[in-house]
Length: 513
Image (tube, rainbow, N blue to C red; front, side):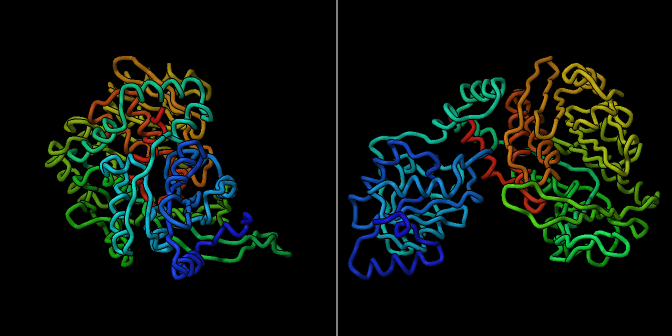
């Protein structure tokens, strides 16, 4: 059979395979990523083919693979080509979904094959194996667990193909030795008991996608054709969405206006019992409107310009008094108080003082942006933070230097704030971490393919703060933050949150050594 006849587009897969079944042929299906074909795969396919007449292998499309940063190592075309060369396989199809359910429904196999390691469903951190088994039962098939020889693609890739620096490989190897995948998952599951209060600026990110047509002939103004609009929730609400993936005990305290369209938008993302958002008629809800070009595969989102809807006037003194009283009354009820200070109005001197004096564990993300540049500097606004994270510009403003020794200045700032953990993230380069026992670590960026950097720092801060509040080792807390940041840069803005499932899958891939 030629390669081209082996490959079936997903939209015709059901029709083609059902014809085979009507001819009386027994159909066997294997599904996975199959990133690097190894002897374990070949034997798995041979054992599967022995159970029927036709072997169909479905693979997850690269944009839906959630095996961690840098995966799949090989793109769809290369994975399909590798599989096509195996005589055992009769048909291959690329599935445009993240899980196997739709692939099973399309093939309707007589026998669906999984590796022997999945006989214990608890080993699957995604929990998708339960959906697989249910779907196979619904279509009238049966499940076979195969694998007389088992290898791990992730382990082989990590040991022989990893592109990380020596220091990052050493960090991952150390964590792999000290934290089994089961122990890592249990540690993350334990986050669910944490009670978290997020205080910070609510920001709505509006993305208008346009196609640039050129310059107008008379005024040389950039001319573009409108395509669509997309409104996302950012700022403290984006952090809230990340954290709620890991613990259900999260409340958001923020400040917003009384725009008629706001209520229905917020109800999509936050429940009434989680919502401590104060509305003030004199305050304009913050909207950051970015005009962007259509996203191209494999390229970072191209942003043309931004328009910010911000008031110089703040909310009324009465509203600030109500906010301060609310925090003073309840702040001690939480295990972690995370302040997302974007400098847009909610954090005043009184509120900062209450949090610094009363919070059992205080995590801080004090951000610099075009509206507050030079004014919202972390060590001018705060004297205490149990953990903090900042970027290159924020660190430069804090130490008052354009060029500086990264770890030395991070150590100085950490002592200044009496912090237990401090992180300095350098975008796509690396993150420096330091703890109160003077241990430190460096972990480079885990994802080279960047879609959009907006929100990556917030994602890092979210899980790193959870780890810090639990007193986890610095290297582990840093890796957790880096994993979330790596997942976030693959998302346009805050269109999605960092899901716990994808977080665990990334960790599983990175620590499988």
